[in-house]
Image 1 (cartoon, rainbow over the protein chains, first blue to last red):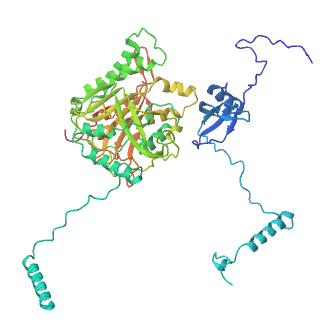
Image 2: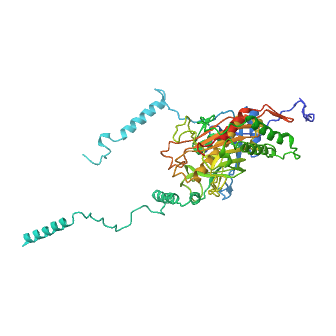
Image 3: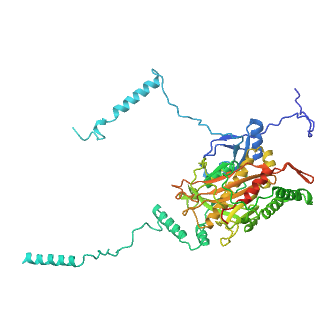
Length: 154
Length: 414
């Protein structure tokens, strides 16, 4: 294993490609705050990336057909103050709106769907749930009284 | 003496009744003014009253110029719609803004009016080829076109020459063209409101406002005529097709807002006799050319650019013509307004026909309005394959024939 620095020959157009440069960019797919059209995907990208970079990144690394990319920079507010009364800045970030090509659509998935919890009969949770339900029923008033309190009556 | 006195009083009352049988009881003049909603309060009824007052003012305007001035008096932020746009799938969005149904193909051919002479196609073909070769071969243009100026270099003068020579040659077959007006690079503007939204920032936050649009178009050439073209289909024709409904704000297209003069203009002022439109000719700009879209992998957007341009430009022109006749969103059109357009990039031609059936696009006027505007359009086809030396290879006669039929369109009585 050569530990010294490896010297690669100078690259000119037409030479074989000896090195692969992986980009130091990272893109985060986010759920849009405002609803976007079906073919639009929203990303948070590095501040140094351009829309051409985004297009090449998605097409070459992920094989996603991209028609058009629009970017904007979101300014992070500087109004909050910490316990020392110093201003705390929220970081700025760049947002990219990518419109997919070839008629593809994308819908951000629901990552935390509400699950119907059915505890198995005999387990601790089931007994607890039953007990709580019984307690609740014992506390509620007789529905035949129509909401009238126990003060009235005999 | 109570009873006789009472009798006397009743007797006098009966006599009074008998002497005045026919006089109708006079309604007492109102002691107080009518109870109406406030004019200045921050309430829905006050807003409704102000709107009614404004509509009455516009209805009662003495002349059309004053009506247009009153209609566009209030300036607010509005979306600027560009007919020649790079936005993806712009034609569907524009259809929803203008309540237009797009029908591929051309409208059903109506009965041909009494032929005043069949045009000589070979002569017209030679005129076209002359214009083509003049720009491509014979005229030596010394300067190479600068960046994004290629369309102005060759296709624009070719189109101008073609249209003016064809119009002149077809004057014998279509007398309407002899009284027509040919405009070069005219302004066409239109302002309208469609749908409602909530104002999100500013001192008017939270109020419900109509969504406003403005088109400022500059077709390459325009033919205006003094008589209206005949309708393609009846006014209440039910079109097979739906107006696309898009539930997102127009900002997502992307479309941007600006506030400036609300102008409505067909190419000439209201007093001009040629106040109806015949045909528009548009040139696709350099940034939306076929080669650029193919290079950017947007081959399916080529037809979309033609369609979006056709729908937006023709809607603006036709609706402005209707407003020049005194119709507006609260006074809907009583007869359909019709226009035609040819959109080209120098080689590929696409033909569009537009029929305006309704101007009532605001929420209040659109509640019980079954009418829709219709736009017919073809796909873009090449007029010629190539120009090699001093001859034109692969000339397509169908395009020329379609162009001639467009120019020959005229009403029955002249």
